[in-house]
Image (cartoon, rainbow, N blue to C red; front, side):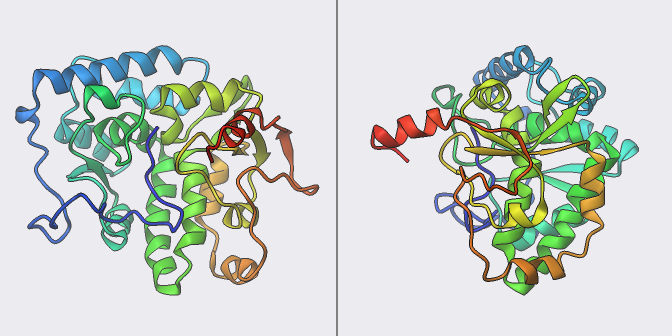
Length: 299
């Protein structure tokens, strides 16, 4: 599993990332020709594992985007080739960054339809967990849905909204919307619940857990509720929020969040596994997984 933000809503520079790069926008050259055979091999292992798991679990739009992009198992994708296809379809491009970047840089890129993707790939012993978003999480998890006009518009709107939220001091609230949609969102299709969140789509274990396990709650998406709900950065989610279709995100992108920030300010907040009597419950979880972890002394 990969974690794009922490609970304070930071997309910011990781403590171990060192000094900022020379460019003000934090972009770097991908350096595709410098990837080693081992690094391409890690990509292949991850790609093939996820490709086996996602049929019948990923949403139709994700599957379609993957088919139309120059992405395959044998090598890490070239950001230039990805950008050529994306630009023609939705006006997006993929830019390489060294890992996590400061909030204002991240939002500025999204607001201008540039998706900042980690240029490095995890080591063979890190296949199942990595704290920073690497090229597999960012490209395999996020980029296919940037081929979809609705998601493309929604993520650009998030970038614009993030710049405003930071000025207003409410970034934590907006980051929860990003977390429970772009990273860990589920959508109801005619043939069942499907994944559209990149944090799930790039994680073998959470792909199965989010859709099939009886432990987590699955609740109807409500923006006020989501803004008041903490999330897990260290494990599977205790609650997933479900939208009815991707068009719901486009409607969300058109909302003025200002009044919502005012409405939720000072209100009580919810633990990740809370279910209220007023929630639209798609399926109520048993809590078995996280209860066992807590009994064992975990979180």
